[in-house]
Image 1 (cartoon, rainbow, N blue to C red):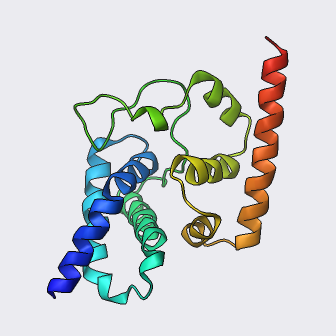
Image 2 (image 1 turned 120 degrees about the vertical axis):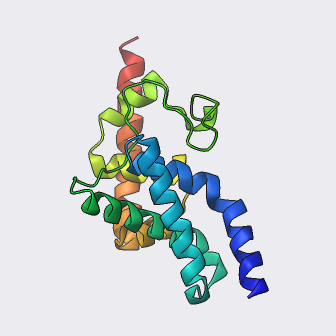
Length: 175
């Protein structure tokens, strides 16, 4: 039991802040929903930790639990489940990890230019790009999280990257 507690603490330290930001985007910046989903996620991580077979798969396993908890939360609330990405309207969002800070850390903040470029992508492409580059998840982790084929995720990510480059080039030409 003590080993499970140590592993839980290690996973929480390594992934807690990222999972909270992920949930915050799933909850469309609703701080109360974020807290409820976050607590339920880590309760389930602790409850089912013994079922984790590969430690290397922990990150995608935890994010899958968070995604499912968000869906469960919104189905219980009788509302439509929000989808990624973070609103890209350029306004600052409070950081769910440090509510006193008033905004996401700089590395996750969306500039106006990036927001405009992401707006040129479809919802699935936006989701994949944010998970891949905003949350630094591997293609395999995203495929597991989204319950999608690895090759499909890889090709959609590649096409979205090409599309973003084209949009950036067009935006650069307009200046």
